[in-house]
Amino acid sequence: MTTTPIASWNSAGALAPKFKPFIRQTIANSRQWEWIPPDLQEAVQVVSHVLPFRTNEYVMDHLIDWSNIPDDPIYRLTFPHRDMLAPDDYAQLRELVLGRANQQALTELVRRIRMRMNPHPAGQMTHNVPRVNDAPLKGLQHKYKETVLFFPSAGQTCHAYCTFCFRWPQFVGMDDMKFDAKESHELASYLRMHPEVTDVLITGGDPLIMNTRSLEAYIEPLLAPDLAHIQNIRIGTKSVAYWPQRFVTDRDADDLLRLFERVVDSGKNMAIMGHYNHAVELRPDIAQQAVKRIVGTGATLRMQGPLIRHINEDPRSWAELWQTGVRLGAIPYYMFVERDTGPREYFQLPLARAHEIFQQAYQMVSGLSRTVRGPSMSAFPGKVVIDGIANIGGEKVFALQFLQARNADWVRKPFYARFDPKATWMDELKPAFGKDKFFFEEEGGSRSEYGAEPPGQRKVIPLISARQDEALRGGGTGGSAAAAGCGARTPA
Ligand code: SF4
Image (cartoon, helix red, strand yellow):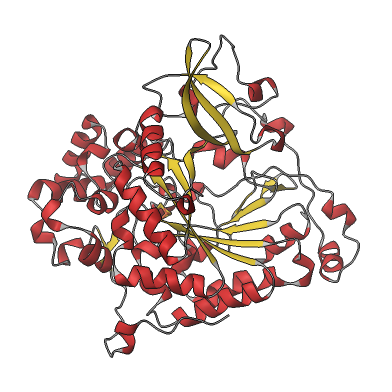
C-alpha cells in the first residue's frame, strides 16, 4: 500500500496553510466580518451564547459564497442565526447580551434555554453508557452489540461547529453532560471483556482535531493480538470537509496516512466515516485530494450526514455529493434525519419530505452511489429507515425497518406507521392498521428514550480486576470477563 504523494500545490512551493479558527470573541477580526450585515452580526453575537460557534479561515474563504448570505448553505451550517432560538428567548437573550447585564442572569438564561433543547437525545446519557460496579464508564457508549463508541478527551472539539449538531452540549461547557475518556486503557480493557464487539468508533467532536501522535496512542493498543475480535476501527470525522488539509498538507498529514496503512496492514479495516453536508464541501481541489489520499492507504471512506432544512434540502446537492465521492473512491453511506435536539424546529423537515428528497436524489445517481441508506433516524430503539410511503388495504402508511436495533432480532423486520404528513421524528408516529403498539414495543422496546430499561433493572457489568486484565492480555482464560453482558450503540 502506498501513500499518494503530497499535494501538488504544496510541493509546488506554496506554504502549507495554517489552521486558523474564529469564535465569537475573534470573528470580528476576519476579513469577511464587514461583509455581514449588522442584524446578522448581532445574531451571531447573541445566539452563540447558547449554541457553540466556531468556524475557520478555510471554511470562510473556500466554502461560503458571501454574495449569498445568509442563505448560503455553509453560512447556515456554521453561523448562528436568530431563528435558531424561539423569538422570546432571542429577545430576552439579546437584552442581556447587548445590555451587558450581570453575568449571573445571563448564565442562568443560557442554561434554561439549553435545557429546553433536549441536550441528550435518544437516551445517550442514561441508557448507552456502560457501567462497571454500577458506575458509568466515562468516555464509552455501547448501544448495539457489535459496536462501541469511544470519545477521546483530546478529540472533543471540531475544526468548525455545525449549528445543528446533536453533540453541541460537549462544546458549551456543560461538563456534567460531557462524554470523554482520558485514556485508551479503559477502552482496551472493556473490549477484552467483550469479544462480541467487532467495531470501535472513535468519535467526538472530531478525533482528527488531534495530532497523529495522540491519535496513535488510542489506535495502536487496538492492534494488539488479544483484540483480534476488533475487525473495524472507525473514525468519525468532519475534517474531510472543514479542514481537508489534515490529510494533505498538515505537518503530520503523511504520518496520519501511515497510521491508516498500519491498521490496514494489521488485517483490520480502517474506516473513515466522513461527515459531509453539502456538495460544495467536495468541490475544492484540496477536498478531493484528501479523499484520494485516504483511500490510497487502503482505508475506506464512507460519506454520511443529516438532511437539514436551510442547508441541504435540494436533492441535486446530495446527488452531486455522492457522485463526486464515488468518482474519487468514497462510499455513500447514510442520509440521516436531523435529530431531536438543539435548534430542531429551525432545521427539521417532515419525514414525508425527507423521504421524497432521498428518493429524488437516489433516482439521479447510478448503482454505485446506491450504497446509501436513508432517510434514517437514530432513535432510541435503533436506527429506523423510511423505506417508502405506500397504500396498503386502503390505508396510507410509512414503510419502516430497523437497520440497527437494541435488540438484534428487530433488524430488517418491516413495520408500518400511519402516514402523517407533519411527523418529523419517530416518537410522533403511530402504528398503522389500528394497532396500539409497534411490534418492538410489544417486545419491551420503546419509541422514545423514556419507558424502557428502568434504572433498577439495568445490568451491572462486573469490573474486571487488574489480574484478570493481565490474564487476558497474556492470552489467559478470560472466561469470566468475556461473559459480561452489555447494551450497545452504533455510530450516530
Ligand atoms: S463536525 Fe460533527 S461533531 Fe463537530 S459540530 Fe459538526 S456535527 Fe457536531
